[in-house]
Length: 355
Image: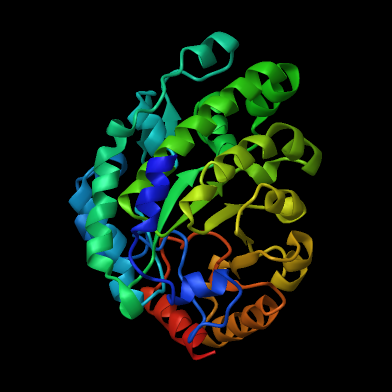
């Protein structure tokens, strides 16, 4: 970790960037805004660039990942870029048999459901994600420094979400095999998440060493759990990841879907910013999260299809509710939907900045 601390001390000078100032609880010159899944999905230039290239191949091609990450920054004028990646990238890099099947999502060749399966899992060596680190270096050069520089957010899936894919063998509606394993064999479960926490740390440390200015730990499926089960089976491992990044000196964002009842526990995991989906108003969420942490969110992505008057009203409401928090980073409550009109997102950015 000493090497990481040295690298973080030599980062681009972006202290006055609106994103970083808002996270510190300050009042930047303009409210910061970026969008989850902004890198691609709805952009025609993304679809043209990705044509004929598989998702994971794009993630491991530095020049391609760099250009995809930059496209929404150019198009929308957002206040942060987020590294184009996927939750299963570090698993793939470690040598675990996983592919992203179009129309399905990540599919695991050999699901992990026993102590022997966990013991057989490979570790992740930093060299295996060298292409991702190279993409980060290309991006920091493009995004600049000083007053006009744009922060770059690193990205990784949280241990629980990675575990769910490994145990289920792919996406799951009910997570029945995952929950069965955690309850019936907690020792194997915790060994699995401990292993995945180490993979996640290695992946994020590589991004930090290459120069990202913040990190987001994304727990897609945590909302499937009760607070009791989250605290027992998930919180210690997410906390280990976030604590392992503390000395890098960059903001840590933690987000999950459907996690309104878990916000207090997620805040205890140690992030500086807690992302909130659209199900809980930001002023209510701020009360659950507690003092000293910023919130991120939380426009319902589906509202972007409702017409400009509705979108504008919702943006204004969310901006007002966000004032109850230590700091507020405007975002969607989940990712940009593929059919979203990019011009609507551009208007959201303009409106947020004007407020």
